[in-house]
Image (cartoon, rainbow, N blue to C red; front, side):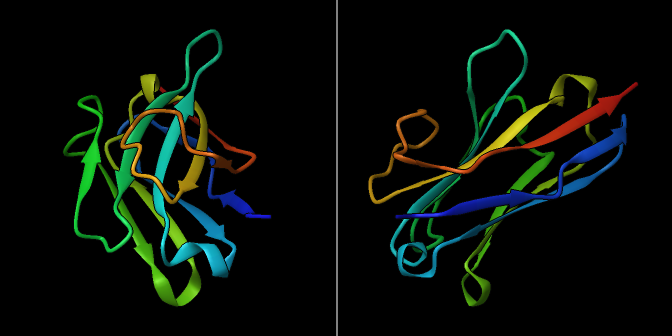
Length: 122
């Protein structure tokens, strides 16, 4: 079974930065496509950023372009989301997801972490 474990959430003031991490089961990590999603209370889950299995391509939601960066570190089986210039509207539970299919920002990935909360205060 694939395991994804997020960390790095917390509270930050508007304009601040935060880096989220997601450690993935080693046997699955190398060949998987991965993404970050977020879900605020009362809202649908939203794709934030996704990265290809060979880092050859990334895609971002318009709302985070220029502020968030997705990356992966193969040596530690870790997916990252660097979030800069955070805004109150970025407040949500953030989830990492993985699959062997490239779903881009669609919430169709078959493997999910438990989530980590990010709260941005104005």
